[in-house]
Amino acid sequence: MSEVEQKLAHIIAEVVEIEKNELLQKRDVNFFKELGVDSLLGLELVAAVEREFDIKIEDEEITDLDTFDAILNLTNKKLEVKK
Amino acid sequence: MLDITRIQNLLQHRYPFLLIDRVLEFEEGKRVKAIKHVSFNENFFQGHFPSEPIMPGVLIIEAMAQASAIIIGKEEGYTGLLTGIYKAEFKVPVRPGDTITLESEIVQRVKNLIRVKATATVNEKLVTKAELGFVVVEKPSK
Image (cartoon, rainbow over all chains, first blue to last red; front, side, top):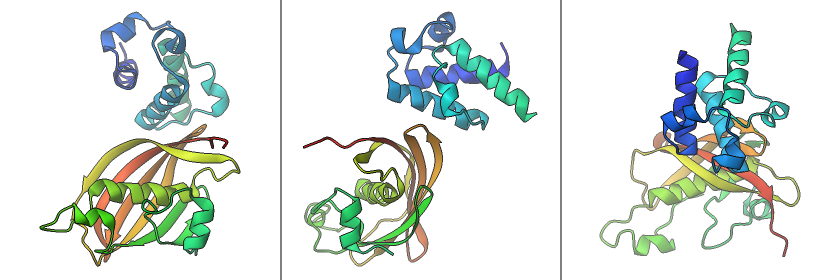
C-alpha cells in the first residue's frame, strides 16, 4: 500500500469513525448509502483530505467522491499535478 | 468599523449572549478584527468563580465564533453554525478589565463548510487560539 493510501485510509477512518481495516475492505462501498456519512460529514472528509495533502478539490469534483477508491484516485491525480 | 448597532444587523445573537462589542476591521469572506471589553458586571462572573473572576474559555471561543460570523456567509436568509472547535488552547486567564482583541481568518472553504483560524489577545499577548469550523445554512423561517 502506498503512503498516500495509508494516510488517506487513516484520516478517512478517523473522520467517518470506522476501523481502518473495515474501510479498506469496503473501498468501493458508497460512503453515503452504506457507511452512514451524511452531507456535512462528506464535506468534512473532503476538507480533511485537502488539509492532509495540501491540495484543492473543486466543488464540481466533490459530487463523484462517494467511495474510498474514488477519493484515492482523485488525490493521486492532484498530487501528480503538483509534482 | 462596525458599531454594536451594525453588528446586531449582521448577527442574530442578543443579550446575554452577544460577545463582541465592536468590529475594527473586516474583509468579507477573508478576515475580521473585533474587540470585546470584559466587565465584572457580566453575568457569568457571578459563578465563575466567586473567589476569582475568570472568563470561561468556552466563552472566549464563542466570542471568536461570533467575530468569525461577521465574515462568513452573510447572504440574505443564510446563517453560519459552528461545526467544530479544533486545536483550542487557553494560554492566559482573561479577567474583568481586560479588552480582548479577536482576530479570525478564513483558511479553508469546501462548498458551504468553512474553517477559520482565530486568536484572542489582551494587550497584544495571546490568550486563546483555536480553529473553528462552520457550515452556512438557510436561516429557519419564522
